[in-house]
Image (cartoon, rainbow, N blue to C red):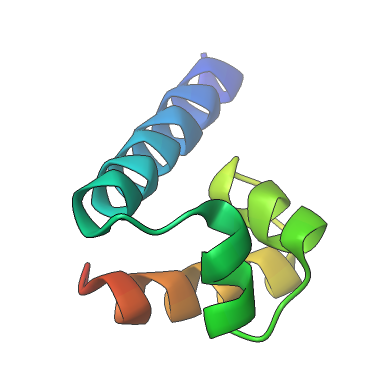
Length: 68
């Protein structure tokens, strides 16, 4: 039950970020450059990784995309 909720939340975050990227015409690669992070780490953060580094990256993404 908890794992399913975690997966659902991660999918919702991923969908929201990808929607904003499409609206703004920004690729994940360009986003990684804008926030000064690696492409793979940025992709992990978008996909819902829960490490502290990914949480920090998501905060940068939210700021760049105006999501907070």
